[in-house]
Length: 605
Image (tube, rainbow, N blue to C red; front, side, top):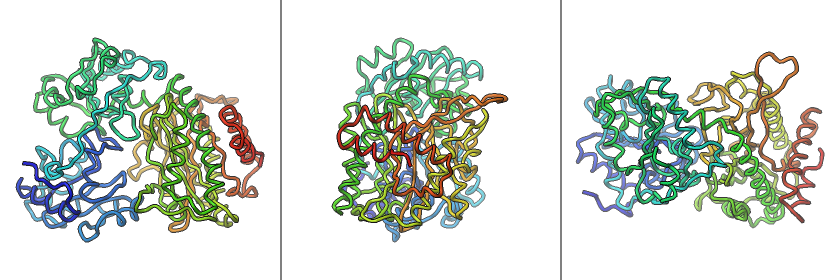
């Protein structure tokens, strides 16, 4: 029976959860930020960690026993978690230095049963945690249903937005072609079917989009694709339109999303492939219960989705031009208004969104804008809200990381600017110029086929390292095509440390970010981010295939933060050539004072 707890305080919510755990006869529960698709960003209905703790970051988890509770986050959220989560209710734990397994071993008695939702965790996660806690006499127990849902009375319902057809001209390939490629893969790998739970993989495979997750145009659904090229789409009936049905054709059967669990029992005696990163324990358990064999292999759409075809590349260039015009207009507005002292972080984010929304093609932002003034700019993943919002101080650095969803592509750009009056300090110029030098070296890199992201990461950090400083995030992530702003499998970052994708080979057609930074706690932060397309390169006398980067993002760099004396002749030439391309791309889209501003800001160094 659902307990009526719509307006409970944080302490009362914790009490309600513990009462539910007692009723179920378990001694604890683990609460991740996750959904049934292992999405990075989840719908409101799946924001269980925020409901319980108040934490609004994008990565972390909590564990609650009958008398203890802790919240685990990495170094990006050390400040934020203390601002948003009551330290009298939850102990703060920092990963990877402090592990969930060790905490459970410390606070649980021998024989404790700790529940987890099998639809929110992967098989590997459960196996790894069991290896840590089973020797301590602790057992992990899959819950029949999520105990938080039993006490969260006003939990939002999943989105009912209708799924939409993604124009094949923008997609560059038909769904039938993509499904045929998956079928070929299944035959080669010796499987009868593959379960595809990742929402962006479903969207890419079937050329559909949706509005079920903020800023990521996906529809809540699953696909089971088979070796004959057919597929089943599991999606709520209210999301299905006649247009969608016609688009999918006879080879794709549409079934109710609620039937997915039972449908997994229909593969008795068959071999089914599951992606270890996206297929949750519940899927594997349902297949096993139905008598199917399953094997963990990477979803065959992952790499294909990451390698953009010509139509997707052209769509991205168009999206970047649209976005560059909007961001440039915003930066001119900011230059005029912020020094007056009347602009705060939320107001700046809203004004940037308004400039983007003047483009009728914009469907959404691609993520919540990071609008960060002064010391907040030193928090790489800062998210402004009514509680944290501050005015942008005159004579300070302001950092804005933002993006949009356009008909042909997904954008992501960071610019760091000086807000006058006065001049930046020598330290600010030094750090910004070192970040810029690293950005340029990565942008200019030429590398052989077979190179992985971890091999390139040092190019962006070298000048910061010379000064004895570094940054704590990756240098580059993949970006989708009218899909997720963070997309695998590629990643440019330091090897190890849980940086998934750093060992994945880079291929022509992939889109990555190039975003080195520097952060001085409590003072200022700097990041320069453009998106780049990996492309084939001709090198005189080359042996084998070589690759390089085409820069896609075109918005002026802040000249006031550049110390020209620190740049080599080649680096100055790169900045001047980049700014010349900014003028070429944006001139047809701007006029009047906005165009004059861009011309001024892109004059040769």
